Image (cartoon, rainbow, N blue to C red; front, side, top):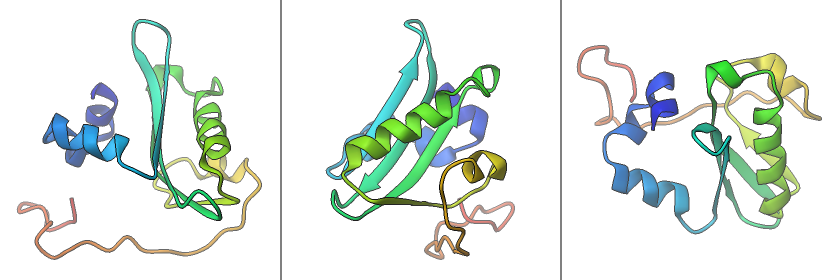
Length: 124
């Protein structure tokens, strides 16, 4: 959960039981990288098992970045997915995602109205 806190991902921090359900739900592949003592990174991918997958979450400990952990997480999740492609929304290092064979698309993340932060008005 420390990685989620470092990234500011409040939806994963609210309720550990809900987080566990999200990371282990049917059609979800969650890969965790660690060094035996701590979690260095994790990725969550949703897949139909045939054609499409969506990389929903990836986080790597800041001190462990640029060591191949993120690439390894994505490659392992992709190999387990059975899909031919992965879609994702990028809110981070675009050069990292551009390092994979890819085709760039524009996209949106749609939120229900009731999930807005009361202070900022932004989606949570």
